[in-house]
Length: 176
Image (spheres, rainbow, N blue to C red):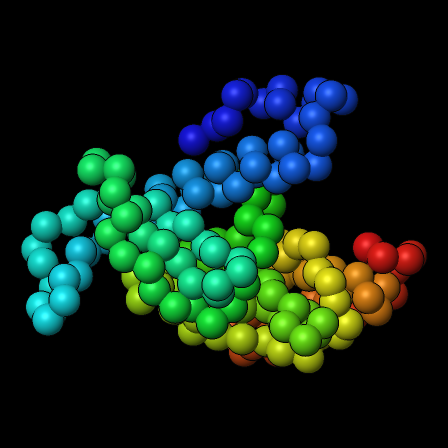
């Protein structure tokens, strides 16, 4: 899904909120395409054979995720996630082939988190990366490593996604 074509980021009349809304919409489209088809689960049932396209809306304030049935344009359910999912954009890679990688900074400490879209749950956490905020996490082309900025400590942390560890850090200028 592309929002308004590729030129929407080039307009100087756009404010940060407009850019973030556009990026969020693109991210939702990408999440929907990456996570489809998803088996629908109903209360009390193990699973339903019917499969539907699902859009995942990550709610930062309530630290949960709302699943929307695309065909019916209705909320299917909202599930607790326990993390405030941050920036997901089509300008950066966040998919390692099985999980969505992003970041959070609870108590002003940056941590990388992996979300399994089928379980709709955080399945890996790499904590203790440094003082927040963070602004982006990018999965590298090998899909086994990632880089995340740790703005409060003026550094980039390089992550080993398979082992959920920090490979190293690189000091940068102020507030990368």
